Image (tube, rainbow, N blue to C red):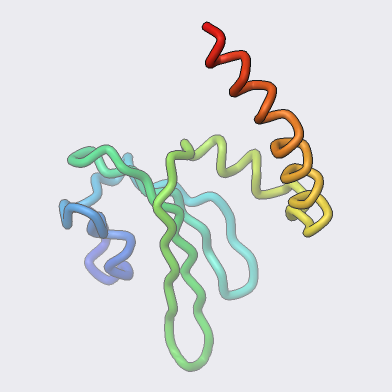
Length: 108
């Protein structure tokens, strides 16, 4: 069972309320006042990335439901952020190529 003093986001799944097992909680990284965890619920099999931020005024937590495994999150955390230009380029590529892909799929 998890440490009873841990923030609730680290002890119970926000989706099914089951208690996390210790093997389902993995520390991914720490920096000044911030820790990042990957949480996997063995009951509902969903995962959450949780960021805990501590400051003189208290503790805040942010959770994000994800389909990433812990190793995926580790790999992605050091990549450059996605820029607005990256988004525009992807939109243009999908817009230009999706019509052709749909046409080919409909021919089958």
